[in-house]
Image 1 (cartoon, helix red, strand yellow):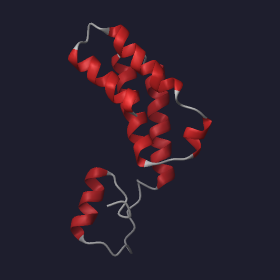
Image 2 (image 1 turned 90 degrees about the vertical axis):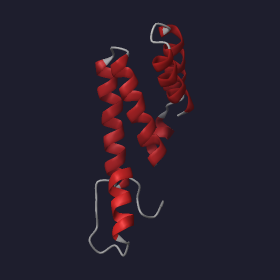
Image 3 (image 1 turned 45 degrees about the horizontal axis):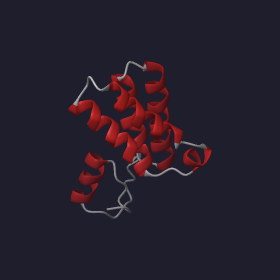
Amino acid sequence: MVNVVLAIGAFCHAPDMTHIVDHFMEKAVSQLGVETLECGNLTLVQAFTLLSNLAQKRNKPNAGSVYLGIAVRMAVGLGLHRELPLWEISPFEREVRRVNGVPSQMT
C-alpha cells in the first residue's frame, strides 16, 4: 500500500519522472502474492483501486483493468456492496458506511 501511495505522489508531483513512478509501482506489484489475494480487507481494496488508477495513468489499461477487477471482487467478497435492513445501526452510521464504503463493524 505504501509503495502505491508513493508512486501516485511521485506521479502527481513530477509527471516527467516516470522512472521513479515505475520504480514504486514495480515494488508494489512485486509484493503482491497469492496470500495477498486470499485474505481480503478494506486496505487491500483501496490499494488495488489506487494501483488500477496508477496503471491507467501510466498507459497500462490491461493491468489497470485487472487490478480494478481484483478490487471489485474483493469488495464484493467482503460484502461492501450490501446494506442489510435488519442492522441496528443509526441512520448516521448507515450514511457513513455508504459514503466511505466501511462496514459498520469497522466504524
